[in-house]
Length: 496
Image (cartoon, rainbow, N blue to C red; front, side, top):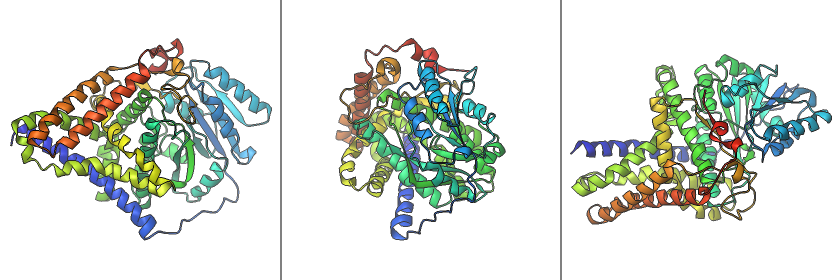
């Protein structure tokens, strides 16, 4: 067996491990919730509600900032115990909108404060840390600009801190605009797989969890004990979560507390969000892997923690498998490799996504009709996420922050581009052209595989379709975009 064939087999084995792990999460969820369910314990309300500061980190969110502030002001919590911070780093007219909305609610007697830092140091992590120095509250809730929490959010989540060992509690993300388009449908299903199955299964088995960056509450003492917010990764939420748990704190996940959020409506925005999550996760691997391995945790918890924070490594592995498939098919070596593993590697996550629809929605059978979109969208973003992983591994642009634009998109899409793309739209980048090249490459591989390795053809064909789908959608949504100066490279992407 050649070196190329051995590398191919190794990549497939590692991919199979991640695919099999998704099936494990699904089986854990099925057993814990349907086969041997436990009665959910609802902790009682505290004798006295603690002080809470709600932090709203914002950067250029003109279309959703007012909706966000209004939803936070509507929270049902004792007024003398609640403090709201609008942490605004905006460089466009979002600042004026936020100031006016804060002034309006201040005049009504709401304890809300508008804070704008002199410098955008540390991005979101820096804003949260800066806000923490300006409050003495016992608990800190965090919401991104695209979230709209229910009024009873705080009264439902705060009782879970009756256990002094609990440092953070995370709610499940819902979706404001899942019905907007095929793209948002696919993203909603992906998020449901993570929140409905994976996070749930990890919580039920006592594995490491993570704060998802929004719709969660932290105990202030936990943040400080873990070292505070740090901006040396693009996943400040994952970073703090692991530092806290390695310090002995417990994190809670509340699957029945749902906070709706807006899903990215542009493919470019989705890729940008995934890029940041992928790069930040691998940065956390570099930062915490050794400490996890050397910790006193069980071997099972260590393994699952490492699989958790390295999950985005599947994208460069999938890209390598695609690239190696053609030469191996031409030489005939692909026939010596057991291809059944590719099926397990590729369909473990979709199985989890499918079960999440059955578990979360009464109309699950209708929602499952959108599952094929995931099978193409997942492979399609492999190029962008592969580059994110490479940047993290080599330490390139460690603090380059790319925001995800939101447009207050609701209902079903009437056009390819939501209103507002003139301001926050994203032009085509090099990854789209790479996707087109890989589409043709995968298509050629599929034709050749049909002759010498038929078992490989479905895999490469799915990648050809996936790369083609993402390239087509990206071009359709982004060609001709001319963004305004406020959302220029200097405004949207800044480094320190």
